Image (cartoon, rainbow, N blue to C red):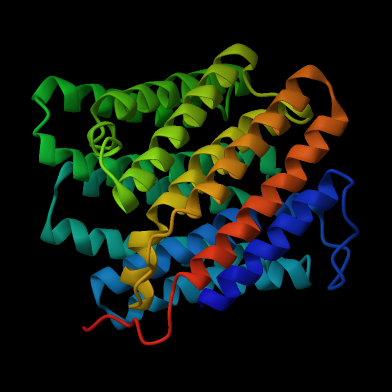
Length: 349
């Protein structure tokens, strides 16, 4: 399943480059450039998140979720039939069943928000299955990933024992984001502006109350993870500002800047930082921190700065350079992570 998720990542990145006119079509078929979104969100990220949930829940049936998402992505790449979106929908639905099981054991606030995030993912996949265009679906996928990450950071914030009013602010930002996603079905611009306000609120909350503000002063892996998180929060804030300013541009450079500020700047920064924790949890191996990890982290954010600047300034060459460097940063991350995982470093269970 990890291999299939990795295949979805490679295919999704290639489709993204093809969409920008920077790469040829995939050899499997003349895949629609609009498959880039579902392949990246559900095929790659959804498979990994579902696998992490299955490992944590320790229920055999839970492994259907990552398998369905990985297979759904593969089918979408191979065929334009509705089977691909159907498998993705079943995969996200299975993750929701897992979250219901978790809520039965612990109704903590972060678990409730994780469940809401999964519902957002399922709604997006159901709309894709109905045949809605990706630009009308992506707001729900954005809610899925942003709320998933925010809920996990909320869980860790309990170490600082935030007062009730601080948690109320968090819930308010979550509610605003979800309300905006629902409103976008009626009015795209105002719906996305509400999503932008909610995203900006969550970014401000995490920049202010996340434990990363303290751990970034430490050394080694702890500082690296904190730096990745804080940089990601800044990109989420950038996306919030763009959504507030422009509403929902259906396509074009601003659309590219807004979405990739979230999906690359925020989400991949979280992946880069959390890999030191997630990979051992899922695969049972140790990933040893190396100072060179700052190379792929720095390249990710430099490349996105170039890409977003090119989008907003109308400089296509700068945008293209940023896109290629996005790919280079992800490739470098994969290589460095593999090199940091040594044979025989498997953890005991």
